[in-house]
Amino acid sequence: MIGKVIKYKFDNNATLNGLFAGRVYPFIAAQGVLTAPYAVYEVVRTNPNGTKDNDSEIDETLVRITVVSTKYSDIQTAVEGVRATFPRTSGPVAGVQYQSCSFDDFRDIYSDKDEFFGGQIDLIFRIPKS
Image (cartoon, rainbow, N blue to C red; front, side, top):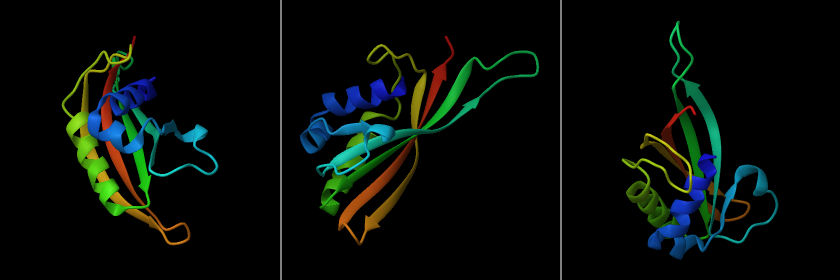
């Protein structure tokens, strides 16, 4: 469900939409040859915050967004766009309720074979259980 938030925010932010033009995919759908620049998102882990007496009421979900382009400047623009769009927000967005979003980490990546630049941005979403 958090994918709806990712897609909505990419499509409705002028910087991100201008760069990616809707080319934002869940990890499983991003197999094969894609036209750069593009972004792929995946849920890396979900940590429930339960107690000994109760199940988790809020899950912390780590989402990794990988941005790919043939130009390093696109990666820098994408990271700045994500950091300006996601952290310190809450939902509902695109019908998905979340309590907060925070920036967690960033890594540069490069593919010698394909000559693509990339970046991986980790965001943590706090999502209340329904």
